[in-house]
Image (cartoon, rainbow, N blue to C red; front, side, top):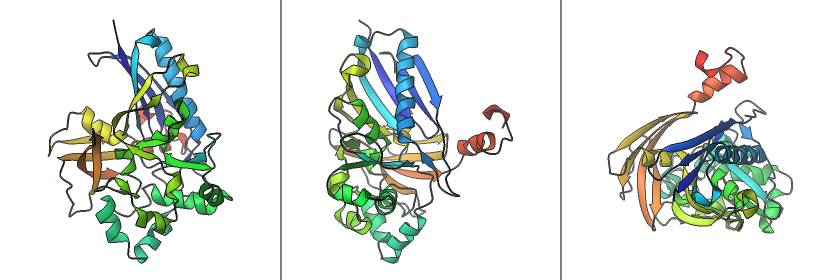
Length: 327
């Protein structure tokens, strides 16, 4: 009997769904762009419900077009744009504000405040990251500070916070699981990558209640089952991993020193360092590459924030080209 894996790839500018067979052949693929919001200079946002609806649409489309029987889909894996941050109502699932995208620079002043408090070196040591507005922690802090009632609701236990993987799993699963995998957690500037637990000192510094954060799970682990009213079957959601880490694994970079480059919305270089937590002398970040069966593997990463995003900007915002190929 044929069996398939459904991969959901929630990216910065589009959502994709891909069906693979047992030989890793692509049986079907569907992709849908969604709206980029730029409310102010340096600010970038997404509508979380549009993220979900676009991912839902391509999932349904790829199954319909492929003709694959739902009963033959054995599991679902999710990979996602990292750092992009959402806070939502625990009961309704509705976001309290737009998703603040990894590219957004609005929290640069909050990062400067953390440095002034002498936390710069602690952040590097605990999280492996260079203190920057790129990461999720200060985005959560901003929403809690700036959105009326958000902090009070968070302290009453009414809100969930997380990256896009958390938001999708919450909406897709019967269990309304509130989880994130170790790779996504390592991009928040809130996770101690040695202990693999949320760092209490950084939570205090950014005034984020730990109760709103997701449970950190393995990158390969059944975290819930697909709502039966979506496809009529409770398919296991069996993997979560940030997009650049999934590319590292997908390119076969499993031994220390093996390196991949990705050219997409931004450009990202990741080099596997295996189980060794390696510090960079040149401002590369140390990040979790994956966690499987509780075993953590690490990587060094360098990022170029704007690559394909510039092509989309030329097309959609400036109107200088009609399609990406013209660039």
